[in-house]
Amino acid sequence: MTFHDQAQLVKKEVAQALTQGSQAAEKCDIIAVTKYVDARTTRKLVEETGFHHLGENRVPQFLAKKEELGDLSIRWHFIGSLQRRKVKDVINQIDYFHALDSISLAREIQKRADQPIACFLQVNLSREESKHGFFLEDVDQALEEIADLDKIRLIGLMTMAPADASPSEIEDLFSRTRVLQEALAERNIPGMPFTELSMGMSSDYQLAVEQGATFVRIGSLLFE
Ligand SMILES: *Cc1c(COP(=O)(O)O)cnc(C)c1O
Image (tube, rainbow, N blue to C red):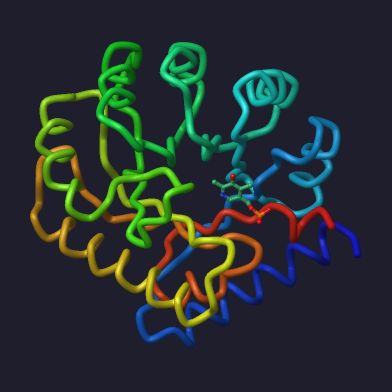
């Protein structure tokens, strides 16, 4: 299949999940995760599919790619965990940061960002040890500390399902994440609109869209 065909398939599935899911959002943007491919292939993908939200998770590869694709109109999402010492290299080069998973990282962003950065608070409601993200009981404390940081704009929550979870476990996790996102949005905290929900990857994006995702992050499905 070509990129065009593969993208059409994903777009169709997302559209279907948006109409079928009783908890689905009004719309859901597809982030094409291009961490697996070089700049040339990324360019081809963008030109063939019209995808303009791209996700990367490695700092040097992202920076090189962004420079090489400077003529394209792309919204860059940094989706991987970010080491504090690399914040200064990347934070003013991206449109969205999906992996805000500690207070120390938030403080470093505050120090290095030239303007407010659209961030997703990463949460780990499945409490999986190997995953990054705040546990439910730590979210309030995190918000209290981040409230003082005017360079952090918390636009939503991000989560990842455990690799070995069953569909019903994944559905439950996505549902609980949406319930938390909605509760946070209702608080109307300044600088923390919490209108977005970043969840769902190649193996579980339909479930995520049905459960309210506003961004899905899809990589391998586009490149296999
Ligand atoms: C790689 C990656 C994705 C995409 O995963 P696929 O299974 O290849 O679709 C999504 N989110 C994050 C955080 C990733 O690192």
